[in-house]
Image (cartoon, rainbow, N blue to C red; front, side):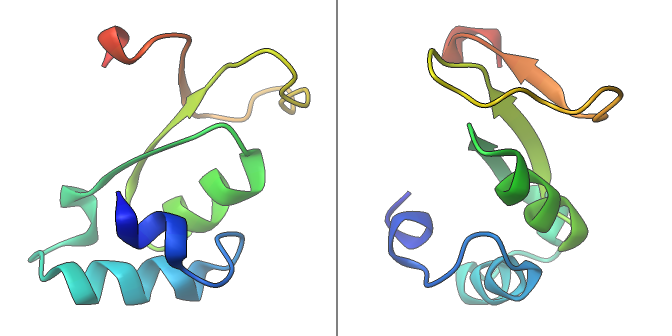
Length: 77
């Protein structure tokens, strides 16, 4: 969790590549990233992470057919 809160730009794929390398997983898909920001979800998915979008009050609208699993509660994971 700390790594994601302290990376420089979470809307760039490069950030998630660096995170997956620093964590030391064999494949980026071993990391589950939950976010409430669509642009972060796109960047993380492009880096190979598994991604879920958290629907929260005040979120911006998601594009139609965005392709991400969405949740309202962590218990849905």
